[in-house]
Image 1 (cartoon, rainbow, N blue to C red):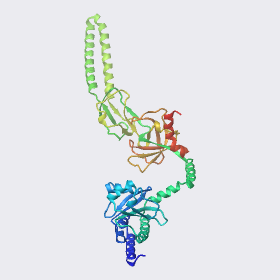
Image 2 (image 1 turned 135 degrees about the vertical axis):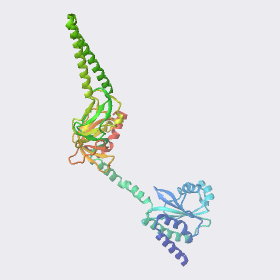
Image 3 (image 1 turned 45 degrees about the vertical axis):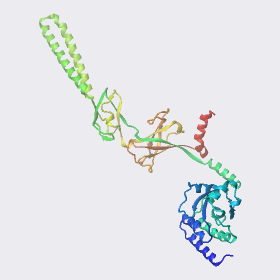
Image 4 (image 1 turned 90 degrees about the horizontal axis):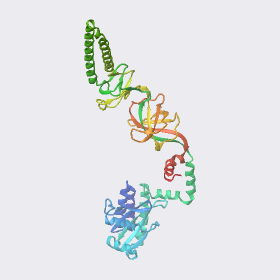
Length: 441
C-alpha cells in the first residue's frame, strides 16, 4: 500500500501534467518530474509514429538530438522492446546478446518499460526508466496509475498519429477491404469532363496585316507597339536613301536625253539624214521619263499608313529598324480591342477530341484568380511547331459575351474541356497511351 506522502506526490505530478499547455511541456513533465515519485537515473519517452517508436524526449535535456550516438543506439534498442501495452521490468542479465554491450555502456542494469495509452486502450508510446536498483511492486503500481493520467493528457493535447494510422489499418482490414474495393470501383464510373491545360495568348481574331509594300530596309516607326491609331496615320517608313539617289540619277538622265533630242531636232532642219536620229532621241526621252515615273512611284510608297482604325501590334522597334524586308512581308497588325480572342497551342501528346463550341477558360498570368470564359471556334487540321518549339495544334477561341476583353498580347494558361468520360478513363488515359507506345498493343 502507498502511504500519504506517495499519494500527495502522485496527485501533485498529475496536476502538473493536466496543467501542461503543449505536448512538449507534458513530455518534459513525464521524463523529469516523475523522478519525485519514483527515483531513477535516466528516462526516455518514445512516441509511436507509423507503428515505429521514435525518441522524442529524454530526462535532463530540453531537446533530443536524434543523430547522437546514444540516441541512435537507444532508438535501435527500442525497436526490440515489447509493445503489448503492459509494464515490463527488464534486466541486463536477461538481455539479448546483441544488446549486452550497448546496454552496459549506455544504461544502468535495471530498466522499466511503462506504456502510454489512450482512454480506449490505443497505444500512444512508452517511457523507458533506468536505474541501478531493481524495481518494486509498489513503484509499479504508482507508475501505472500516473501513466494512465499521462496518456489521457497526451490524448487531450493531440497525442500521436498512431491512433489515426491504426484506424487506417483497421479500415483496410479484411472486414472492410471488400467495401473499399467496391467504393473505388464505383468511383471509377463517375462521369467527369475530360480537360487539358495548354499555354495560351490573347490575340486579335480578325487583325489586318500591314506588310512591306516593296523590297527595302525598315527605316523608322511612327507609332509604338500597342498604340491606338486612326485611318491615314503614318505607321512606319522604309529607308529612302537608295531611292533618293536613284531618283536624282534618273532626273539627270532625263535631262541629258531631252538635251540630245533637242540637238537632233535642230540638225534635222539642215540635214535630212538627221531626221532618223530625232525618233531615236525622242524614244530615249520617253524611256527616261518612264524610269523616273517608276522610281517616283516607289519613293511615294516608302511611307506606310493605316487603312483603318485600330491598335498597332508588333514587336520591339529595335528588332525591325535596319532589317531588310521583301514585298508582302508582314511587319505589324492592326487589331480592334473588342475583337480579342484566345490563341492556344495544344501539344500533340495532350490532344483530346474537341468540337467547335467547346468551353475554354483562360487563366492569365497577371490575373490567375480571375479566369475568363471563352468558346472554341477553330482547330488546326495538322500539328505545327509552337513558339516554344513543341509540336502542337493551333486552337482559337472567342471570349464569351459580356466578358471583359484583356489586353492583346497577355499570356496565360487555358483549360479546354472536351467530352464527358468516366473517371477511370480520365485517370488512366495517359498511362494507357504510354503503355501502348511501349508495347505496341
